[in-house]
Length: 125
Image 1: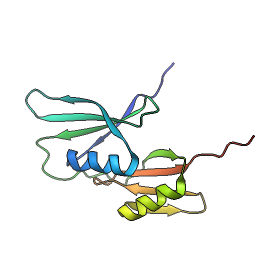
Image 2: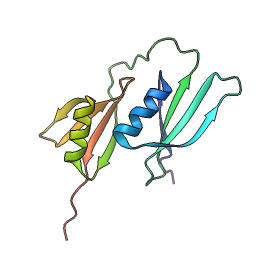
Image 3: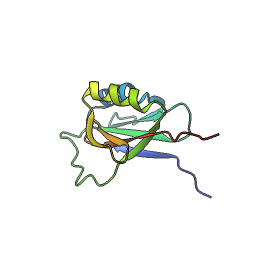
């Protein structure tokens, strides 16, 4: 049996990305790995509830932002208070696309990665 472990985004500015993910989604570093020669640093972010982590990889010698192609992918997050999250992300200027019919919206991080925000399903008694 296989179980999800982590997903990777390469980031151009690690400190700014860490601040964005903390402010926008409350993700915190859970472990780090740094090359002995300083050529890369990896920070795994967790949500404090699941075992799944988002791996942010920074490469010292990278001189320009990443080309994400057609961006036909995204990472999705479930949120209990959808309205409060939307308001916060709107104030941050991070919302890049909304689909009111489906009841979802997307954020764009500093490197151009899209993050889908999905409301938690209401449980019926």
